[in-house]
Length: 150
Image 1: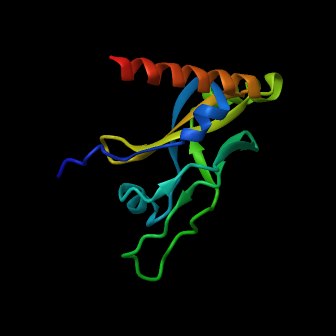
Image 2: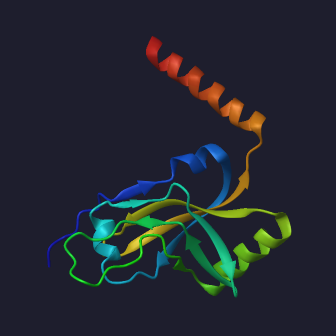
């Protein structure tokens, strides 16, 4: 069996700017037919996606996986909601924190593991205020200036 390349790493860069990550988990995904082929081709986007609970199960919505070009008549919907696979303990822990503390679950990274399965890294996050975002911009600018001097 050929060894799969582990080069697929699609990140949600906007989430790092808008949220403060408290905890991260890796979840499996329920995919249909040609979706995994599109992910392996790198044709997916996390920019507007978010996670939510329905019947104590975790789903991701607005995850864009482009249609597979070489498929015949069977195609998947690009923006359908997809179920995330976590253990019952992880799900109950996340659900409790989301309900009690007003936190949210954000998809941060989509990748293919060494076995060839698509995985999603999700983060339990707290929204940043405007002044927190300004502080991050200021820190980033200072680091950039320091790296230019040396």
